[in-house]
Length: 79
Image (cartoon, rainbow, N blue to C red; front, side, top):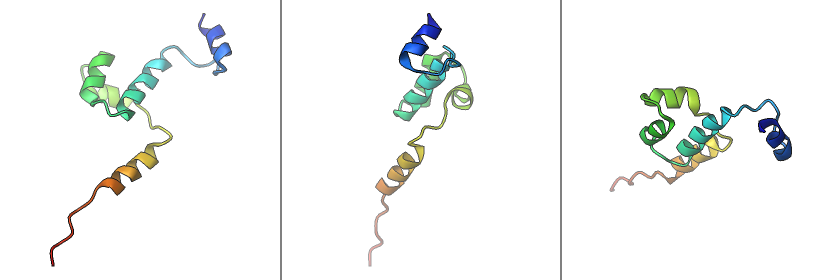
C-alpha cells in the first residue's frame, strides 16, 4: 500500500513511512508550536530528542530568521 501511494503522489520510492514523523515535527516547530508541546505529541520525554533527531532545517529558515531580526527594533537613544 505504501509504495503504490508514493508512486501516485510522485514521491521518491525510498521515502519511509517513519519519515512522516520527522516532517510532522519539523512542520510543528516551524509553525511556532512550543517545543515542549511538540515533544509531548511525539511521545518524547526529552525535548532534546525532538530537536536533535526529529526536526530539520527548512528551505525558508534563512528568510524567517532575517524577517524576525528585521522586525526586532531597539528604542532610539534620547538626545
